[in-house]
Length: 113
Ligand SMILES: [Zn+2]
Image (cartoon, rainbow, N blue to C red; front, side):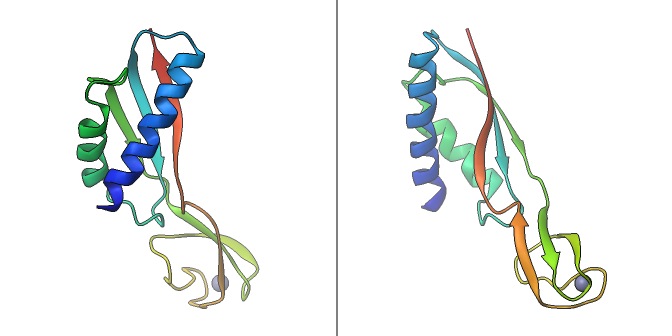
């Protein structure tokens, strides 16, 4: 499962950051999952729950934000918001779009005690 390996990698990062901050426990994680990232938020939530067990982030509140995808349209030369990869330009219907953002998952914030 794709989400489980992401969650495992995320927990490695969280563990490192928590150790660097001399934190006892991680109380909250804010993740950003771009609309174009092919990551299922529900599946990731479950996977993070499993991956966090026994670590500093066990029981942490998990907030998931899902920013829309952004792309630059070569036809109308405008930055637009798209819901899915391969979607046409919402302004002109063109297909020549360069994805600019919303295609990655990242740890945005972390609260520790
Ligand atoms: Zn366009």
